[in-house]
Image (tube, rainbow, N blue to C red; front, side, top):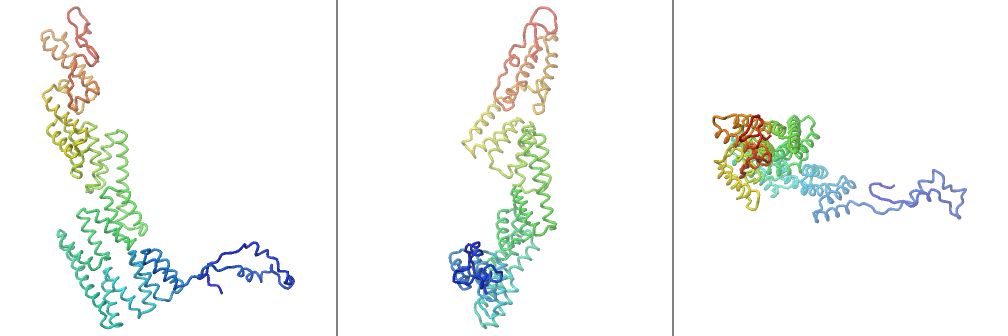
Length: 512
């Protein structure tokens, strides 16, 4: 008989075997090699054993892998040994040790159960199970096994020491639960009790989940991610760990990883209400965030403002780090729309999260310049310079602010045309110029011609600056732009020829 679990074979040329001719010294009539009855004999005759598995050899190979810290290989060898000798306790205890090294504690515990079931008198397996249950804060199971060990080996010192540790761990865990319920604000007390539990039971999932709750409330998302990672290594399907890990990735603005963890959780429990809700929220948030990014990239600033605000409304109490992108986007979009008050508000929100962002400080300084709050602009620009003294754009910004402060008493061309700096469009500027040029044309004001000429000149200068997008932009940034009479159309507004008709004298013309 061939045991297929114990032998590996390779085949010779099977075609030639089937077509084999009988040797000359045999009577072909007496032995028919093509007969079906003879085929098994011929078939197995050509099977050549290469390697035979042996339980003892597999255990030795597993031990060698363990010594080299190759735990995956060790598990495989011990599994082979179990397949070859499923009724032996030893391979189970050895595989349990490999699982423990890989922090696959539930599998290790199942193997120790099987080992003890196979050999109830195996004290080493019982000792390992006591220790593992204590580490996992399965205190009732550990204490029960201590009693079994005392019956097996009365006065067994190691098990009595484990009993003492288990009782201490149980007391600390009970206290941690009580403190967390009764004193939600007393986080240090909760941490202290959990720390005591983990000193005794480092693999205690319940204690780590309590710590996860405390850390999440404290917005220590890095610790939550670390703790849940350790939990999921031991229990890949722990729903609470997957939920809190996903929430923490969301809070750190990693929506893709958040959705990945929620999807993974839903594989274990497709109807888990809390996780389904979180998954829908993150999908909605990412959808709106993508819309806002696309609008900003396309320069559709009004659409971007709406989309960024909608993203912030998806989760009213969105974690600061997760909201940073949206406030930065609003800051820039409002500035592009020449809305300094809104830009300053959004920039300030973003700076509450990232107070050392040079780009944010520069953007808010630009908003202050637009609002002609030179002092506030100077504060932000100087803060940016302290953070990055090699940023040339910061030095240029400071130069514009200083120049703007000097020119605070300069003519307000928007005011001359009766317009708002923040809302005036090119059409508004042209329309206001036409109206005021007609109003102050010297030919229209023969009784106060000197005043009319001065006003007509100011109106022309204002139009010269504000009708040119480049000049207007430089003027708005506080640069020193000297209005050149007649600059808009390349000539002097006091040209020959009276557009209103009439004879002699100095004539005035319009420039559109």
